[in-house]
Image (cartoon, rainbow, N blue to C red):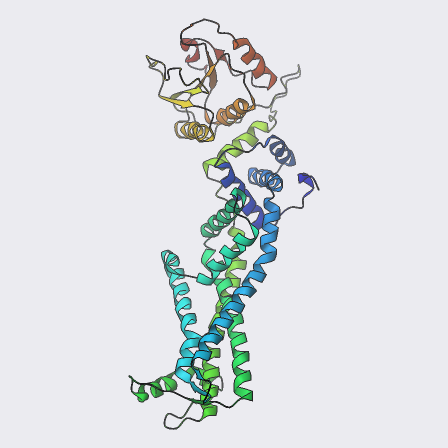
Length: 463
């Protein structure tokens, strides 16, 4: 088994899908990605390229690459299976209008059996192109069935399989490629089905004698005669016979039936398949995640935190080798955000009375959802000061470090407020020194620690 770093790079569309699938998986909770993050950052390139490389390394660990490769191998076979099913269904319908005893064929009934479902589904697909909301009512039914069966047989039913399926759909919808891809699958199936049906029809009409005509109980036979004449116009341009309205021969009607299946069935589907393939080739470069989403912005901030400082005026006396914090793209506001992080459930929060300098308070219990809520509040407020209140006796861990590194680029300044138990006030609660040493060990000792509210909420010094 090769290490993740030895995996060949994925094609752009596959890389985009893996990146989006990892994002959907992390919506339920962040993955442990310290090694992948460092490897992606060390590779250099744009932030988008680094995010894609990190996702590729995580996808290798989660077997997303293997699932996607199985789906790509199985998709053509699923498509051929659907084509075979459509052929059998069409031949069964056509056989139902043949009188096996007298070998009589009602050409109008046979034409409806061969072209009816095709024309309805083609109209629904065209409607879905003009009105995207119509796809929910039947646009590209065969394409959706192909996608569903391929996903069920190859991706599995777990979280990873669902993330690949939904991630692919999101990318296709964002690039406006979903109706074209589903249409391509549907048109290819119908093209193969019509080719097989024509082969069977030509074989039967060439080696067996049938009596062709039209019959009706409710309608005037002249109505069918006019329809035969009208439908024969387009096939006539390609050299197919136009039946005599008064006394058509079996040969004329057989040629008319074959010509109608080609002109109104095979050719439209083949042309639509070529159009869908051309649209796919032209637009597949648009398959990319929405880098503006908060998830990716937070990820870019983590890469920024790992980037080395750019030295403009080198210090000849030596300096601190730690990475500098990234500069803020948006100027901080005057807001102050006070957040209690992993405080015991029986501790009152927010503190009463609330200091007047505080603009907004949050309580974060460490879950992914509440961490996300804190980061979203920071993106919304861009506060000049983030005060993170922690239990001094608690032991800081990698989760705390990760939250700090994600929050630092979103606030003007950050400060830790180390709290003792509510019933034992103390100017220096036990454990405060440990937090200071921990911050120094991870290169964040420029984050001040305070044990009193007045010190914690002290306005940061001007840069």
